[in-house]
Amino acid sequence: ELMWLTERLMPDFKTIADFRKDNGKAIKNVCRQFVILCRQMNMFTDAMVAIDGSKFKAVNNRDKNFTPAKMKRRIEQIEKSIDRYLAELDSADREAPSAEAKTTRLQDRLDALGEEMERLKVLEEQMLEAPDQQLSLTDPDSRSMKTRGTGIVGYNPQIAVETKHHLIVANEVSNVGVDRRQLANMAEQARAAMGVENLVVVADAGYYSGKEIVACERNGITTYVPKSNTSSSKAEQRYGKSDFVYVAADDEYQCPAGERLIWHMTTVEHEMSLHSYWNTAACMACTIKAQCTTGKERRIKRWEHEDVLDAMQLRLDRDPEMMQLRRATVEHPFGTLKQWMGWTHFLTKTLERVSTEMSLHVLAYNVKRVINILGVEALIRAMMELMKYLRRKPVYQRAISLLTNVSEVRSTTSCFSHALG
Picture 1 (cartoon, rainbow, N blue to C red):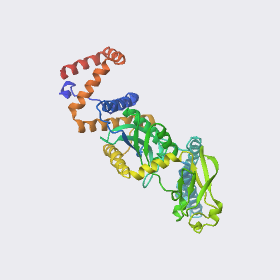
Picture 2: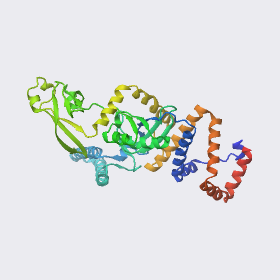
Picture 3: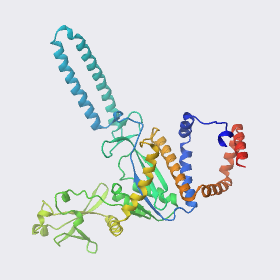
Picture 4: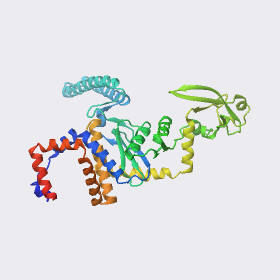
Protein backbone atom coordinates (compact mmCIF):
# COMPACT_ATOMS: atom_id res chain seq x y z
CA GLU A 1 0.00 0.00 0.00
CA LEU A 2 2.81 2.39 0.82
CA MET A 3 4.55 1.65 -2.49
CA TRP A 4 1.30 2.38 -4.32
CA LEU A 5 0.66 5.51 -2.29
CA THR A 6 4.10 6.97 -3.09
CA GLU A 7 3.93 5.80 -6.72
CA ARG A 8 7.13 3.83 -6.18
CA LEU A 9 8.96 6.99 -5.21
CA MET A 10 12.22 5.91 -3.56
CA PRO A 11 15.49 7.61 -2.62
CA ASP A 12 18.64 6.77 -4.55
CA PHE A 13 22.00 6.00 -2.92
CA LYS A 14 23.05 9.66 -2.93
CA THR A 15 19.90 10.75 -1.12
CA ILE A 16 20.49 8.16 1.59
CA ALA A 17 24.19 9.09 1.87
CA ASP A 18 23.39 12.82 2.12
CA PHE A 19 20.69 12.18 4.73
CA ARG A 20 23.16 10.25 6.84
CA LYS A 21 25.82 12.93 6.36
CA ASP A 22 23.57 15.94 7.07
CA ASN A 23 21.66 14.51 10.05
CA GLY A 24 24.36 12.86 12.12
CA LYS A 25 23.41 14.61 15.35
CA ALA A 26 19.71 13.79 14.92
CA ILE A 27 20.46 10.12 14.17
CA LYS A 28 22.54 9.82 17.34
CA ASN A 29 19.75 11.49 19.33
CA VAL A 30 17.18 9.03 17.93
CA CYS A 31 19.44 6.15 18.96
CA ARG A 32 19.66 7.55 22.50
CA GLN A 33 15.91 8.29 22.57
CA PHE A 34 15.12 4.68 21.71
CA VAL A 35 17.18 3.55 24.70
CA ILE A 36 15.11 5.94 26.86
CA LEU A 37 11.96 4.39 25.37
CA CYS A 38 13.22 0.93 26.37
CA ARG A 39 13.85 2.26 29.87
CA GLN A 40 10.27 3.56 30.06
CA MET A 41 9.09 0.10 29.01
CA ASN A 42 10.89 -1.33 32.10
CA MET A 43 13.30 -3.42 30.05
CA PHE A 44 16.31 -2.55 32.21
CA THR A 45 15.30 -4.27 35.43
CA ASP A 46 18.79 -5.70 35.96
CA ALA A 47 21.27 -2.87 36.56
CA MET A 48 24.13 -4.79 34.97
CA VAL A 49 25.99 -4.31 31.70
CA ALA A 50 28.86 -5.91 29.84
CA ILE A 51 31.31 -3.67 27.98
CA ASP A 52 33.46 -4.63 25.04
CA GLY A 53 35.08 -3.24 21.89
CA SER A 54 35.76 -4.71 18.47
CA LYS A 55 37.90 -3.70 15.52
CA PHE A 56 36.12 -2.61 12.32
CA LYS A 57 37.87 -1.74 9.07
CA ALA A 58 37.81 1.83 7.79
CA VAL A 59 37.73 3.15 4.23
CA ASN A 60 41.50 3.30 4.24
CA ASN A 61 43.86 0.77 2.69
CA ARG A 62 46.76 -0.47 4.81
CA ASP A 63 49.18 0.87 2.21
CA LYS A 64 47.78 4.36 2.80
CA ASN A 65 48.34 4.28 6.55
CA PHE A 66 51.74 5.23 7.94
CA THR A 67 53.35 4.61 11.32
CA PRO A 68 57.06 5.08 12.16
CA ALA A 69 57.65 1.31 11.84
CA LYS A 70 55.79 1.07 8.52
CA MET A 71 57.57 4.12 7.15
CA LYS A 72 60.96 2.70 8.08
CA ARG A 73 60.18 -0.62 6.38
CA ARG A 74 58.93 1.05 3.19
CA ILE A 75 61.96 3.32 2.91
CA GLU A 76 64.27 0.33 3.44
CA GLN A 77 62.43 -1.61 0.74
CA ILE A 78 62.78 1.27 -1.73
CA GLU A 79 66.48 1.66 -0.92
CA LYS A 80 67.05 -2.06 -1.55
CA SER A 81 65.16 -1.81 -4.84
CA ILE A 82 67.27 1.20 -5.87
CA ASP A 83 70.48 -0.70 -5.07
CA ARG A 84 69.27 -3.70 -7.08
CA TYR A 85 68.33 -1.59 -10.11
CA LEU A 86 71.65 0.29 -9.96
CA ALA A 87 73.48 -3.03 -10.02
CA GLU A 88 71.40 -4.17 -13.00
CA LEU A 89 72.05 -0.82 -14.70
CA ASP A 90 75.82 -1.26 -14.32
CA SER A 91 75.54 -4.75 -15.75
CA ALA A 92 73.52 -3.44 -18.71
CA ASP A 93 76.11 -0.75 -19.42
CA ARG A 94 78.76 -3.44 -19.84
CA GLU A 95 76.63 -5.35 -22.32
CA ALA A 96 76.38 -4.77 -26.08
CA PRO A 97 74.61 -1.68 -27.47
CA SER A 98 71.53 -3.86 -27.93
CA ALA A 99 70.88 -3.45 -24.19
CA GLU A 100 69.88 0.19 -24.65
CA ALA A 101 66.18 -0.61 -24.26
CA LYS A 102 66.88 -2.42 -20.98
CA THR A 103 68.94 0.54 -19.74
CA THR A 104 66.10 2.96 -20.50
CA ARG A 105 63.59 0.74 -18.70
CA LEU A 106 65.81 0.47 -15.61
CA GLN A 107 66.40 4.22 -15.58
CA ASP A 108 62.62 4.84 -15.68
CA ARG A 109 62.16 2.54 -12.69
CA LEU A 110 64.91 4.33 -10.79
CA ASP A 111 63.27 7.69 -11.50
CA ALA A 112 59.92 6.36 -10.25
CA LEU A 113 61.54 5.03 -7.07
CA GLY A 114 63.24 8.38 -6.52
CA GLU A 115 59.89 10.18 -6.80
CA GLU A 116 58.34 7.68 -4.38
CA MET A 117 61.19 8.28 -1.93
CA GLU A 118 60.59 12.03 -2.07
CA ARG A 119 56.86 11.49 -1.51
CA LEU A 120 57.54 9.29 1.53
CA LYS A 121 59.88 11.92 2.99
CA VAL A 122 57.08 14.51 2.81
CA LEU A 123 54.58 12.06 4.35
CA GLU A 124 57.07 11.21 7.08
CA GLU A 125 57.23 14.85 8.14
CA GLN A 126 53.41 15.01 8.32
CA MET A 127 53.31 11.73 10.25
CA LEU A 128 55.83 12.88 12.86
CA GLU A 129 53.86 16.08 13.42
CA ALA A 130 50.70 14.10 14.33
CA PRO A 131 50.05 13.64 18.10
CA ASP A 132 50.12 9.84 17.86
CA GLN A 133 52.61 9.77 14.94
CA GLN A 134 50.16 8.12 12.59
CA LEU A 135 48.98 9.28 9.18
CA SER A 136 46.05 7.94 7.14
CA LEU A 137 45.56 9.38 3.67
CA THR A 138 42.00 8.28 2.76
CA ASP A 139 40.30 8.52 6.16
CA PRO A 140 42.40 10.87 8.31
CA ASP A 141 40.80 9.69 11.58
CA SER A 142 41.35 5.96 11.03
CA ARG A 143 44.23 4.28 12.82
CA SER A 144 46.27 1.10 12.63
CA MET A 145 44.74 -1.55 14.92
CA LYS A 146 46.28 -4.76 16.21
CA THR A 147 44.08 -7.78 15.60
CA ARG A 148 44.55 -11.53 15.56
CA GLY A 149 46.67 -12.33 12.55
CA THR A 150 47.30 -9.28 10.40
CA GLY A 151 46.47 -5.79 11.66
CA ILE A 152 43.85 -3.54 10.08
CA VAL A 153 43.33 0.18 9.61
CA GLY A 154 40.03 1.08 11.22
CA TYR A 155 38.13 1.99 14.36
CA ASN A 156 37.42 0.45 17.75
CA PRO A 157 33.66 0.80 18.50
CA GLN A 158 32.69 0.40 22.15
CA ILE A 159 29.30 -0.87 23.33
CA ALA A 160 27.65 -1.43 26.70
CA VAL A 161 25.04 -4.21 26.64
CA GLU A 162 22.55 -4.86 29.43
CA THR A 163 22.57 -8.48 30.55
CA LYS A 164 18.83 -9.30 30.57
CA HIS A 165 17.66 -8.57 27.01
CA HIS A 166 21.05 -7.89 25.38
CA LEU A 167 20.07 -4.37 24.32
CA ILE A 168 22.86 -1.90 23.55
CA VAL A 169 22.40 0.94 26.04
CA ALA A 170 25.49 2.99 25.07
CA ASN A 171 27.90 3.09 22.17
CA GLU A 172 30.90 5.19 21.17
CA VAL A 173 33.43 4.89 18.35
CA SER A 174 37.10 5.25 19.24
CA ASN A 175 40.14 5.35 16.98
CA VAL A 176 42.41 4.15 19.80
CA GLY A 177 43.32 0.50 19.38
CA VAL A 178 43.36 -0.43 23.10
CA ASP A 179 40.43 -0.51 25.54
CA ARG A 180 42.29 0.37 28.74
CA ARG A 181 40.96 3.94 29.02
CA GLN A 182 37.37 3.21 27.96
CA LEU A 183 35.93 1.55 31.08
CA ALA A 184 34.85 4.56 33.18
CA ASN A 185 33.55 6.49 30.17
CA MET A 186 31.38 3.65 28.82
CA ALA A 187 30.19 2.64 32.30
CA GLU A 188 29.07 6.20 33.07
CA GLN A 189 27.26 6.46 29.73
CA ALA A 190 25.48 3.17 30.45
CA ARG A 191 24.51 4.27 33.96
CA ALA A 192 23.03 7.53 32.64
CA ALA A 193 21.18 5.78 29.80
CA MET A 194 19.62 3.20 32.14
CA GLY A 195 18.71 5.86 34.70
CA VAL A 196 20.17 4.03 37.71
CA GLU A 197 22.36 5.21 40.55
CA ASN A 198 24.28 1.96 41.04
CA LEU A 199 25.46 -0.25 38.22
CA VAL A 200 27.40 -3.50 37.86
CA VAL A 201 29.87 -3.61 34.95
CA VAL A 202 31.65 -6.64 33.53
CA ALA A 203 34.56 -6.36 31.08
CA ASP A 204 37.52 -8.42 29.91
CA ALA A 205 41.17 -8.04 30.92
CA GLY A 206 41.81 -5.48 28.17
CA TYR A 207 39.92 -2.92 30.28
CA TYR A 208 41.98 -3.44 33.41
CA SER A 209 43.25 -0.08 34.65
CA GLY A 210 43.57 0.93 38.28
CA LYS A 211 42.60 4.54 37.61
CA GLU A 212 39.54 3.53 35.55
CA ILE A 213 38.35 1.04 38.18
CA VAL A 214 38.74 3.60 40.98
CA ALA A 215 36.84 6.19 38.90
CA CYS A 216 33.98 3.69 38.50
CA GLU A 217 33.97 2.93 42.23
CA ARG A 218 33.64 6.63 43.06
CA ASN A 219 30.59 6.89 40.79
CA GLY A 220 28.75 3.98 42.38
CA ILE A 221 29.72 1.49 39.64
CA THR A 222 30.78 -1.99 40.75
CA THR A 223 33.31 -3.54 38.38
CA TYR A 224 34.31 -7.08 37.46
CA VAL A 225 37.51 -6.88 35.38
CA PRO A 226 40.14 -9.66 35.55
CA LYS A 227 43.83 -8.81 35.57
CA SER A 228 46.25 -10.43 33.15
CA ASN A 229 49.31 -11.85 34.89
CA THR A 230 52.14 -10.10 33.04
CA SER A 231 54.79 -10.44 35.75
CA SER A 232 58.15 -11.37 34.24
CA SER A 233 59.19 -13.08 37.46
CA LYS A 234 56.24 -15.45 37.06
CA ALA A 235 57.51 -16.44 33.62
CA GLU A 236 60.86 -17.23 35.22
CA GLN A 237 59.17 -19.47 37.81
CA ARG A 238 59.71 -16.95 40.60
CA TYR A 239 57.16 -15.72 43.08
CA GLY A 240 54.95 -12.93 41.76
CA LYS A 241 53.24 -10.16 43.66
CA SER A 242 50.09 -12.27 43.98
CA ASP A 243 52.05 -14.70 46.15
CA PHE A 244 52.55 -11.97 48.77
CA VAL A 245 49.60 -11.43 51.15
CA TYR A 246 48.82 -7.89 52.27
CA VAL A 247 48.02 -7.62 56.00
CA ALA A 248 45.87 -4.49 56.19
CA ALA A 249 45.86 -4.29 60.01
CA ASP A 250 49.65 -3.94 60.13
CA ASP A 251 50.19 -2.35 56.70
CA GLU A 252 52.68 -5.10 55.86
CA TYR A 253 53.13 -7.88 53.30
CA GLN A 254 53.64 -11.52 54.26
CA CYS A 255 55.99 -13.31 51.87
CA PRO A 256 55.80 -17.03 50.86
CA ALA A 257 58.43 -17.82 53.50
CA GLY A 258 56.23 -16.37 56.26
CA GLU A 259 58.33 -13.25 56.84
CA ARG A 260 56.92 -9.70 56.92
CA LEU A 261 57.85 -6.93 54.45
CA ILE A 262 57.43 -3.55 56.13
CA TRP A 263 56.78 -0.10 54.68
CA HIS A 264 59.87 2.02 53.99
CA MET A 265 58.93 4.87 51.66
CA THR A 266 56.35 6.35 49.27
CA THR A 267 57.13 7.46 45.72
CA VAL A 268 55.11 8.97 42.86
CA GLU A 269 55.28 7.24 39.48
CA HIS A 270 53.05 8.10 36.52
CA GLU A 271 50.96 10.34 38.81
CA MET A 272 50.35 7.38 41.15
CA SER A 273 51.38 7.30 44.81
CA LEU A 274 53.16 3.99 45.47
CA HIS A 275 54.17 2.57 48.87
CA SER A 276 57.31 0.39 48.93
CA TYR A 277 57.78 -2.59 51.27
CA TRP A 278 60.82 -4.78 51.91
CA ASN A 279 62.78 -6.61 54.63
CA THR A 280 66.51 -6.80 53.86
CA ALA A 281 67.48 -8.89 56.91
CA ALA A 282 64.82 -11.51 56.29
CA CYS A 283 65.71 -11.79 52.59
CA MET A 284 69.44 -12.19 53.26
CA ALA A 285 68.76 -15.20 55.53
CA CYS A 286 65.90 -16.66 53.43
CA THR A 287 66.37 -20.25 52.16
CA ILE A 288 64.05 -19.76 49.16
CA LYS A 289 65.42 -16.39 48.08
CA ALA A 290 66.49 -17.80 44.67
CA GLN A 291 62.80 -18.45 43.89
CA CYS A 292 61.90 -14.85 44.75
CA THR A 293 64.54 -12.36 43.60
CA THR A 294 68.11 -12.00 42.32
CA GLY A 295 68.63 -8.71 44.17
CA LYS A 296 69.60 -7.97 47.73
CA GLU A 297 65.97 -8.03 48.84
CA ARG A 298 62.50 -8.41 47.31
CA ARG A 299 60.55 -5.17 47.09
CA ILE A 300 56.80 -4.90 46.71
CA LYS A 301 55.03 -1.73 45.61
CA ARG A 302 51.43 -0.97 46.55
CA TRP A 303 49.23 1.73 45.03
CA GLU A 304 47.39 3.95 47.49
CA HIS A 305 44.02 2.79 46.03
CA GLU A 306 44.95 -0.86 45.71
CA ASP A 307 42.34 -1.81 48.29
CA VAL A 308 39.72 -1.11 45.59
CA LEU A 309 41.49 -3.52 43.22
CA ASP A 310 41.77 -6.13 45.99
CA ALA A 311 38.03 -5.86 46.67
CA MET A 312 37.28 -6.35 42.98
CA GLN A 313 39.54 -9.40 42.80
CA LEU A 314 37.72 -10.85 45.80
CA ARG A 315 34.40 -10.35 43.96
CA LEU A 316 35.80 -12.15 40.93
CA ASP A 317 37.00 -15.04 43.06
CA ARG A 318 33.52 -15.37 44.58
CA ASP A 319 31.68 -15.05 41.23
CA PRO A 320 33.87 -16.60 38.50
CA GLU A 321 30.79 -17.09 36.30
CA MET A 322 30.72 -13.33 35.65
CA MET A 323 33.24 -13.77 32.83
CA GLN A 324 31.02 -16.36 31.18
CA LEU A 325 28.09 -13.95 31.52
CA ARG A 326 30.18 -11.27 29.82
CA ARG A 327 30.92 -13.48 26.82
CA ALA A 328 27.28 -14.54 26.48
CA THR A 329 26.09 -10.92 26.65
CA VAL A 330 28.34 -8.55 24.75
CA GLU A 331 29.71 -10.84 22.04
CA HIS A 332 26.18 -11.56 20.77
CA PRO A 333 25.45 -7.99 19.52
CA PHE A 334 28.87 -7.62 17.91
CA GLY A 335 28.40 -10.93 16.13
CA THR A 336 25.01 -9.81 14.83
CA LEU A 337 26.30 -6.42 13.65
CA LYS A 338 29.24 -8.02 11.84
CA GLN A 339 26.90 -10.45 10.12
CA TRP A 340 24.77 -7.54 8.91
CA MET A 341 27.79 -5.58 7.71
CA GLY A 342 29.14 -8.50 5.70
CA TRP A 343 32.87 -8.18 6.25
CA THR A 344 32.97 -5.83 9.22
CA HIS A 345 33.88 -2.53 7.61
CA PHE A 346 32.44 0.96 7.80
CA LEU A 347 31.29 2.77 4.66
CA THR A 348 31.84 6.36 5.81
CA LYS A 349 34.95 8.37 6.57
CA THR A 350 36.07 10.46 9.58
CA LEU A 351 35.27 9.74 13.20
CA GLU A 352 32.10 11.85 13.30
CA ARG A 353 30.46 10.15 10.32
CA VAL A 354 31.57 6.69 11.40
CA SER A 355 29.94 7.41 14.78
CA THR A 356 26.71 8.24 12.96
CA GLU A 357 26.93 5.01 10.98
CA MET A 358 27.50 3.05 14.18
CA SER A 359 24.47 4.71 15.78
CA LEU A 360 22.35 3.59 12.82
CA HIS A 361 23.54 0.01 13.26
CA VAL A 362 22.85 0.14 17.01
CA LEU A 363 19.38 1.63 16.46
CA ALA A 364 18.50 -1.08 13.93
CA TYR A 365 19.79 -3.78 16.26
CA ASN A 366 17.84 -2.47 19.26
CA VAL A 367 14.60 -2.08 17.26
CA LYS A 368 14.80 -5.63 15.93
CA ARG A 369 15.70 -6.93 19.38
CA VAL A 370 12.70 -5.25 21.03
CA ILE A 371 10.40 -6.54 18.28
CA ASN A 372 11.67 -10.08 18.90
CA ILE A 373 11.10 -9.70 22.65
CA LEU A 374 7.81 -7.77 22.86
CA GLY A 375 6.36 -7.85 19.37
CA VAL A 376 5.50 -5.11 16.89
CA GLU A 377 2.19 -4.06 18.48
CA ALA A 378 3.69 -3.50 21.93
CA LEU A 379 6.51 -1.43 20.46
CA ILE A 380 4.09 0.71 18.41
CA ARG A 381 1.91 1.34 21.48
CA ALA A 382 4.95 2.47 23.46
CA MET A 383 6.08 4.74 20.63
CA MET A 384 2.58 6.28 20.34
CA GLU A 385 2.58 7.01 24.06
CA LEU A 386 5.96 8.68 23.66
CA MET A 387 4.63 10.75 20.73
CA LYS A 388 1.68 11.93 22.84
CA TYR A 389 4.14 13.07 25.48
CA LEU A 390 6.38 14.82 22.96
CA ARG A 391 3.46 16.65 21.31
CA ARG A 392 3.02 18.58 24.52
CA LYS A 393 6.59 19.88 24.30
CA PRO A 394 7.10 23.42 22.89
CA VAL A 395 10.04 22.23 20.78
CA TYR A 396 7.82 19.69 19.05
CA GLN A 397 5.16 22.32 18.36
CA ARG A 398 7.72 24.64 16.77
CA ALA A 399 9.06 21.81 14.62
CA ILE A 400 5.58 20.93 13.38
CA SER A 401 4.84 24.57 12.51
CA LEU A 402 8.04 24.77 10.49
CA LEU A 403 7.35 21.54 8.65
CA THR A 404 3.76 22.40 7.77
CA ASN A 405 4.95 25.55 6.00
CA VAL A 406 6.54 23.34 3.35
CA SER A 407 3.90 22.37 0.80
CA GLU A 408 5.55 19.07 -0.16
CA VAL A 409 5.75 17.96 3.44
CA ARG A 410 2.18 19.08 4.07
CA SER A 411 0.81 17.10 1.12
CA THR A 412 2.84 14.01 2.05
CA THR A 413 1.67 14.26 5.66
CA SER A 414 -1.91 14.47 4.45
CA CYS A 415 -1.51 11.36 2.31
CA PHE A 416 0.04 9.40 5.17
CA SER A 417 -2.73 10.56 7.51
CA HIS A 418 -5.42 9.23 5.15
CA ALA A 419 -3.50 6.00 4.63
CA LEU A 420 -3.09 5.44 8.36
CA GLY A 421 -6.73 6.35 9.05
